[in-house]
Length: 99
Image 1 (tube, helix red, strand yellow):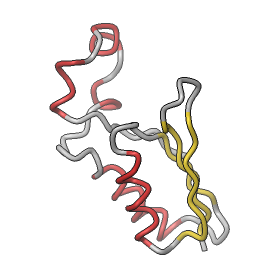
Image 2 (tube, rainbow, N blue to C red):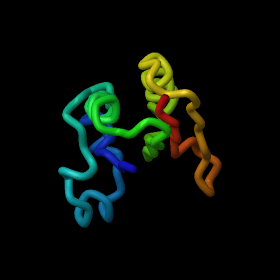
Image 3 (cartoon, rainbow, N blue to C red):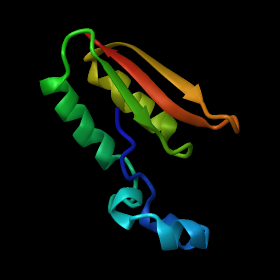
């Protein structure tokens, strides 16, 4: 399970002050302008270390959820991939079962 940093540098100026002032920036921001690099790294680790039938669980940025879903599906190391919504109706979570 991972909640990686997924906020891109371009989004930083639009964040509320309570997020910018009280959340660790290392936990929030990815230097990757696409916001996908943390997921690519997690995918590499999952391929090597996640047991067969293991579950990969990720928190997603609603703006990049579709791209992360495609990245996971294209990896062909998971039998199923499911997206789930948060209480506000935004796509927020991904669950994938490893082959």
